[in-house]
Amino acid sequence: MASYNKIILLGNLTRDPQLSFTPSQTAVVDFSLATNRSWRAQDGSQRDETCFVDCRMFGKRAEVINKYLRKGQPLFVEGRLTFDSWTAQDGSKRSKHRVTVEEFQFVGGAQQQGARSNSQPSSQQQTNYDNTSQQAPEAPSAPAYGDAIDDIPF
Image 1 (cartoon, rainbow, N blue to C red):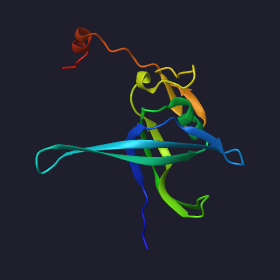
Image 2: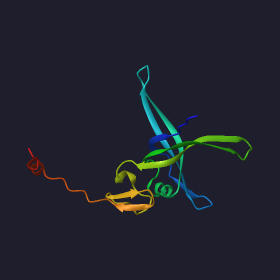
Image 3: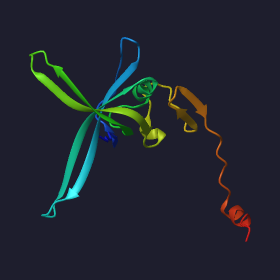
Image 4: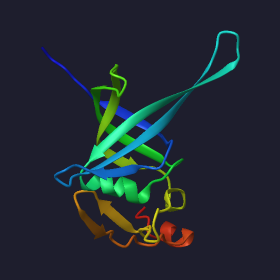
């Protein structure tokens, strides 16, 4: 039997990420995304719908999310849908679906991202989410308009 479990979301954080650690000291971050949908109803009125999705990520990249994101900022995530069930304090059975994030990508510029600490990455720093940071190569400056025309080979 074939199966496929992939979730792709682009939304805004509804609250600051909450970082915790497992007993084996693996980082876990929990956050929630709000995704919006707009459409025009049959009567011509504009309708909007917001969906709130709980997300969880593990490992060093969870610490990156906790460090650089806060409520209201956009985030692109890819992951899988997981089902959690538990018994509440009153003895009732509870359950919910959650997205376990496997990959993510910051959305927006450095001004939109901001940092939760004073150490913001520079606009030329590229983060490799496998625990290392690398300095991005210096981008060549764009030639002046007249220079670009002189360089055309025809």
